[in-house]
View (cartoon, each protein chain N blue to C red):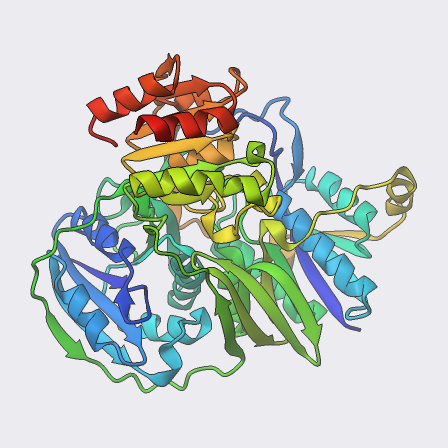
Length: 249
Length: 312
């Protein structure tokens, strides 16, 4: 069985304007729409396409988070994942812990690939894929914008500062998805119905034997410094004059 | 004493300018002694450039044919080896550093602080989350080794004129062969580098096509600016990915940023909010970009760009 594991994180929806709580203890989550981390959705879409091309047999969606993460895993199943596993925790787990959880599942599921989003849009860490690859002692190909599977290898085009870099990695490997890897499919109503019957196993950190070590204490959240709103100039001449006065042109 | 190891990014025999910003960040850690590690095939010139950054105490040069082009899986075990005895290991928050440093952190069994924008103490840092909509202050336990990527736009480059000593180091590590470099396709350009340019002109979806996107090149050339693009423009194929400015592209801090036909999604604003002066040109007076712009000009960009050039 050629299996792909995909990480699914429950985050505040991409379109929500995030606000810091007045007491600095976090951000406002009451009544806020939650969704699959957009990069994870892209990762899942890629896993499904790899399976549809015949380069994999099964796609397993992995969630780590509170009980409500089941909602995002059901969406993943509706998109086409074959089954899902929720590792339940109410703690805010740090990337090294997530990587250790993924490693445990790698050991029981023996995947040919793990595809994760390159980062989560809540903590913006961009760490888990690389950390998993390190402790699994396997290759990593982060920020993927194209993945070609061939003969036990993946040829991955990566979005890097210089442009596009292509590397080849032996499988199994950890790949992380960048924005332009694909455009995730829309979920259709019949698929949502079908997803209700797909297996979603629930376990927890203690059962799989990972401790939620906290290495970085979060002391406070603050809103960012706001830029002062400037002025509207009436035409190009006024703009250039203003920039010239500041010595900018 | 806080011993800080900075991993040098370089390509084509040139030290990446972001390394000098990392040195500034490291120098803001109290009682810091700064070491730069250069992993290269033949890194003498890069090591020399690193040694000339003010504030650097020494440069460790690890030459090995497998070290170029840089691959995280090859470099991480070497960085982890050199990290022994260092309280902090820093890298730039570029695609190089973002790829490499978490792999290093995992090998060291350390936590990583991503995108450090402010050092409050040797163990306490500020970093952006939620695409810059919130700033968190995090603290590592006393005595814990800290791995971090430095948000380059938050720091000025450290001055030149240093003369650190350079030591060659041999690491008896067999590089992994499971990861192989194939190619990199980078557009060569005579324009200033987007990441470090003092002026940047960026185009958005409103330009409408790759041909029209070329319009902003004329303006950029007139003022010696680098060219950037919004995610929408890159997604639409008007501009290559390496020009993307914003949360998932480059985070920049130029003296002058001119946003043309960019509405100003929060992810884009995150990439430019450290710019000294922001100019926005957009036909929609309600576009969010005007909320952060120092100078706004409402109108048709196809008419306004030539007018601006005429006035220059």
